[in-house]
Structure formats: structure tokens, C-alpha cells
Amino acid sequence: MKPCQNCQAVIDEYTLDKQLEPLRELTVDHFNLCVDCTTIVEDACVECDGAVYVPRSVTGTPDYCPACRADRLAQTGQDPGWCADTAST
Image 1 (cartoon, rainbow, N blue to C red):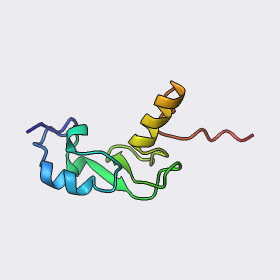
Image 2 (cartoon, rainbow, N blue to C red):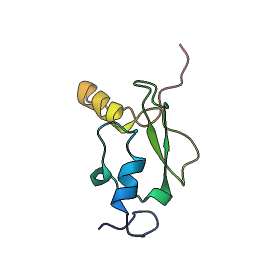
Image 3 (cartoon, helix red, strand yellow):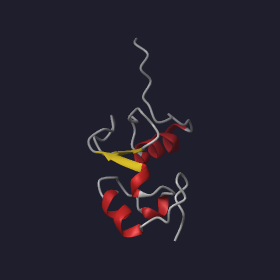
């Protein structure tokens, strides 16, 4: 059992896996945060309309889910970050 990176509590893997279900291809093995230190926001990804996770200490919601961020990094070789570019054209 791993401790939470944020609060150092032991991560309840069963509860966290249940909370992570809306996230594409992610399991408790990909996280170092406990259920109390993260929030799942469904339909928030601008690419796939999937869920994103937000650490409780963060005030904004990311635009990309972890899977879409990883896909864009693999395709372009550049990390898009968690938020889409909001510059107008």
C-alpha cells in the first residue's frame, strides 16, 4: 500500500479504483493520491469528453484527461500541458 503524495494517508486502492472508473485506461497504479485528495470531473476533456482528475488543492479544471494528454504528447512530441491554449486567432 502506497501513501498519498499529498496527505500521506494510506491509499485505499478499492475506493480509488471505483472513483477512477470514468477515467480512460487509468487505475490506482497510476496514482499517488488518495480519494480524499482528488476529484473526478466527468465530461471535462476537450478532446474526448471524458473525465479528468483534479487534485483538491487545484482550483481550475484541466482541459485534457491524462489519456488525451499522453496521446498528444506521443503524436506531436510536445506536452500540451493540462489546459488547452486559450489564445484567440
